Amino acid sequence: MLWPVIASFLLLAAVLWAIPGTRRAGSDRAIAWKCVPPGCAVMLLVPELLTAAVWLLAGYGRGISSRFFNSGAVFFAVTIAGVTAGILLIVKLRNFCRRKYASPESAPVNGPYRTVFLLLLFAAPVIYVAGLFAAVALMMNMPGGYHGPWRTYPVAEENGVALAFQERSIHPFLAEYDYRLRFRKAGKDTYRDLWCNAGGQTHVNVFRLSNGRFVFSDKDEDCLADLGTQRVFVLRRFENKFCAGLLPEGPFDRPASVVTSGGRPVIHTGRRKLETHVVPETPDRKNYFGRVSYGFFPASEKPYQPIPKRW
Image (cartoon, rainbow, N blue to C red; front, side):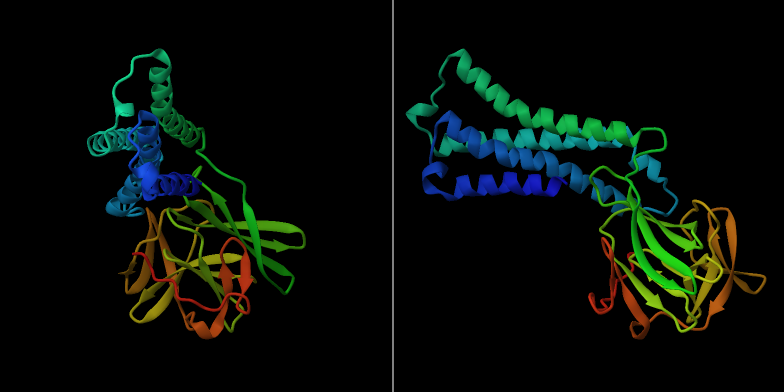
């Protein structure tokens, strides 16, 4: 949501600095128009980059709760950092313009109108950004957290069972989503929660195995959906094979790597242990079925493209 706003500020600044006439203009009004737009862009860009850096450095899903990152304190901190960086950039650019492009019009002029104009021009982006992130902080701390509506993407229907991929936004403007699968049989719906996409647009490759099972694979996880039993398994590679562990119903912790217990491979999800079985057929481009990306697109519409794992 913010990237078009950031781009518009940067585009306006680039145009004003690219045109020789406006670049060399030394009046206070011209300086304000050249300096405030890039400052506004920085006020919005810095919180975005800081938030992304925190997720990457902390290693989301490796023992650190997502509630910490979704707290109002974090949003307040990144907002203050963004506003401070934006104001500093505006001041630096203003001083540069006054030194480089001084003119009689840029001499200090007393008067309430000029002061009010400049104050409003400088205060508007600060108020906008602070208000935006304050609203986000309030939404993220609502009971149950922020959740958008579920979006449903039908994938396949076989033997009277319809399979659909569902996602919903869990952040007001960042690309973060809850995922789940919906099985529909004889008008009855069964839902199986999947992993949380903590950053990045939705790109999930779908494979159909010869036994009729479907595999969903994105940058974070692989899962196996069985239409006959309406169950979902998490997939992990173990000793050059894929092991499938039955996911529990309801929310679950991100699955960890496969370990052996009593000579059998086991997948841990928090305090739970998932007994596994070997999957004889592994997903490959030869059984590529389609892709989920703001809708489901069959292989004929979106050809296969591998999705590298993030971890």
